[in-house]
Length: 97
Image (cartoon, rainbow, N blue to C red):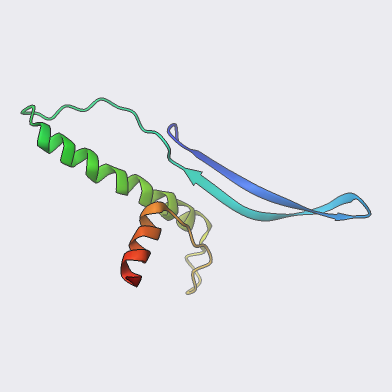
């Protein structure tokens, strides 16, 4: 991806002051800025604005879907990875209210 970051968090385990093992602490995916030029075919500003507003939640949703798909084993029935994004949290909060 050229418009975001994907990083890991590793936690070392120490014995007698020496690192002996490393455990995966988690991953972070952040799609913070996407820049491109868009023009609606009939120069309709309202359609262009509607398109732009529809893309933001999609990018946010990918922040939790991509890690879930990368780290989840499709051969097991339980979900092993659970991603979090602004869109997912807002959707969950709306359901609770």
